[in-house]
Length: 406
Image 1: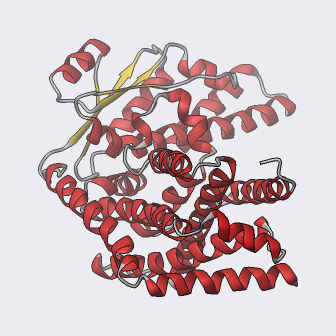
Image 2: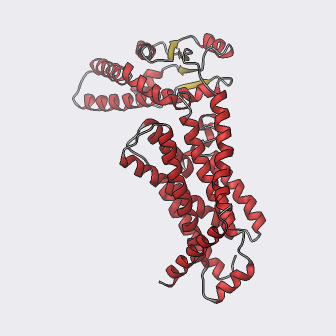
Image 3: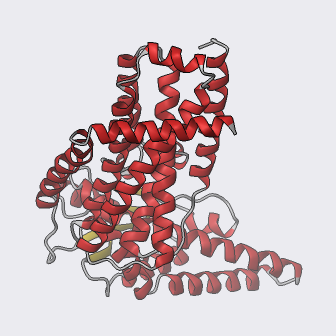
């Protein structure tokens, strides 16, 4: 109970200090909005697509089998009804030439023995080659390519199941192979129907369909920067003499840290929620109540995790100036590896694992999915795990600081 009393006293004190700085708080909240808003406006003006231009994707078939030829033909035909998307079958030499001439955004290579390996359940990877001079278009089409790969994996899983039970029922090898091939082609064409691919292509055009993509990413950056700026504003006035006096009264570092997390988190959450509501209203996006709650959970977790990281760095480094610089560097890493400045597709492939376990990437990804694509689901496992790890670190460091090990 005593620690809770101290936490509430610190929260009230932080709010009181901010009230005395009533000119500083609006500056903290508005300055990132103005700066990032200008950047969004410039990006949305420069990086715009002509609706008459089609995004072209090539298919290169290096497998001589009839099965792969059917797959490639099905893929090429599935994009005919998708507005703004063109999938064509080309040779590898023609694809390279079209990449050099900037007439092809990317091409997918089906390697030799692709179908044969898939039928046996062996790993058979598609190779995707992008155009370095058309990076934005490559990002736009990336989810369509992901859809192709995902459907192929799903089809492979289904035919392997059929193959397993066909063996158990004693079917001849020839009959079993014919059944597998027919089922594979049937399922693959079904999941890659025109409507399905059109829907995925529509989702892929987040970055090109309007300014909302840039606005959502800007919103994410703004609320992350707010955490840093508000934390610095609250910590700047705390002197070492004040900390010594607090120790005399039995105030623990844990109470101070939790109060700072709650003060920063609550203020930034309220500001972010209001700003998000304004963005949704401005964009004419009407979300269901359950999706608004999902957004609030994602924003809350991101803000509180970031606030805890700021305090952990502050406790690890004795100098306020050094910790401020390190906090800024970490903040930039959080924003960068969320994919809000540079999309994930432009990073080296060996960083994919890092993205997969980055809480800010998961947060931004699902915020985009809910706002831009109307998804009615979300995943927060990485965010929950990161929150737990940060909380444990906060507790351990507070104990070490009490015992003067830090």
